[in-house]
Image (tube, protein in one colour):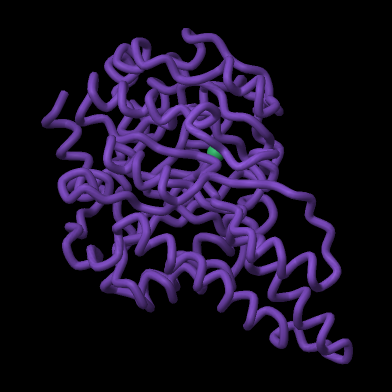
Length: 342
Ligand SMILES: [Zn+2]
């Protein structure tokens, strides 16, 4: 079984100076696309499911698809992560389902919309850390709020409003110390979804200085960048060429993510780029071959298109070639590690 705690992967990434892409899944073709890319590039991989994904595909389907992925790719370390858990109950149910990592997003209240207080965030995060670490499971937390909404999660902040909810580097140290979380999602002006920036982002909208400052204060803290799709213009062009209507929009430049990786970013969440790649491939087939009616006719190219995007990110983030280096630790071994460290 190659499903391992995410912490092991992030520690290895920190030691060797790379980042790990975390790709969202809802169905079989997306899991296959990620594993194809991981094999091709020899990468350790984080596969994540949001609450929306868990209800769409049903936990049991998702769990067995992940087990299939690990059986078919025994050489690839896989972390199975709950993206944006809205409550301790959501995280606990994920752990019971076999997830090896969870995110407790206490930056928002349980409704997944209202920005939460510091005390609330510390309390729910700590509760999940205690439960998870006793089982060897990794915990990601969030401080500050991102813009946008994805799968019903998010305060819906605009590009401008998100600037008022950035992570405060002076608070980050206290937060990590009080909660003992393994990784920290930081708000630096990024947004969820396809509509991140109306203009090409510059250093002013994307606050890389916040990342650098947190890294300076806490060199051992694993940071997570959410909403980090690059929204490649060529993928938008394919969708629009074949009947789509995507307005002008920009994502996070890969060079900025690489800059973040130099300053302690170890996990990079990418979802929108994969959605764009699949949708473009499907639109192309359905437009050029109006007689096609076998779902495989369009799902196969869609899977291939997503796999190409994932493989490109794996190379750009530096995780390519590191599959063999990550120790295949079990949750039990990780549990002993946490017990020894308190
Ligand atoms: Zn997110």
